[in-house]
Length: 397
Image (cartoon, rainbow, N blue to C red; front, side, top):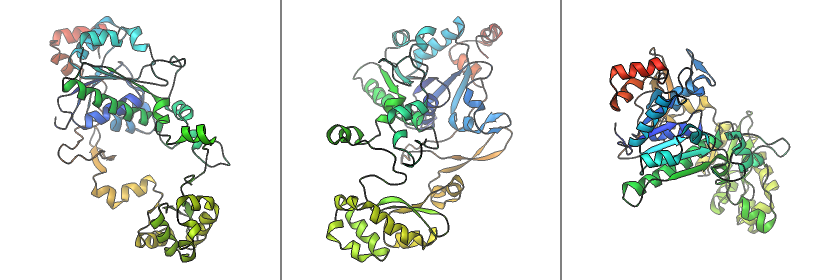
């Protein structure tokens, strides 16, 4: 394996989205990720959303580059295997409810005693402490209590969800950042391992910009504003003649002047009252109406041509069909050609971020359940007879 995380071993004790997305990112950049799944059905994500020959397409993406071992954590032998793997791991990533690993005998006290340099990423709904720690928490709850749903959607409609599991993804990213910081400390000899406590709620809350000080000092409660960016004017979604929309961000002073000139409103471009954002925000409804009056006379393509020529940030709202067909996505290797079991060709998302010297790569798609059980156990020193005996007892599959 190559990549900046080559030589790093990650043990994944998670399922569904938050923990597995974090380990997917690590695996794409060279980490050896060993995913522990329950025998039988494995990670429930294997059966989520759209399927191909009985397996979720999401699974193939979420688990690419990982090794799958099927281990029964309810058996003493299965627990011993996990402990052995933890001894040689650099990172453990888990998303049990707080206390879940402790009930199995795999808590931080146990694993850190086996491996003092271990970094343990713990992703949960509310975190490992606090009065809500024992509540079940999925990404949807994190989005709700973290503040993003209250601010998403039209003011005339109930709060909306983002179209993907953004709460889980934000928690994953915070988990990876925490793991890398902790690994740096260990690998540079600055200290031993530690716990990275990631809350779904707090991960969402962390990206909510100036929400708190605006409320504390000004009594401002940011709420739903549709496509507009409150207090930053003009920045909104505008209708076009052909039934489409363009997103226009004319919110710096020089860009605003270029935008107004491009749509034929030099009077507004030169208006002293609109020279800065504070003045423009006081007249946001008028400005949005003016821009919409212009955009309704253009098709999406025509509007974008005018705005691009004026160097005004603007874009169409992409569907997945637009993304897959877009030449910029293709030029940046953001649409990769993959192959599923049986030889079926399928497009998959590329890798982010782009590293110039040690880029990430896709070595294989999500594996079959237990595909690497034998090879991983062999690396622990178990011979074929011992592995067969464990399989016979139901400790592994």
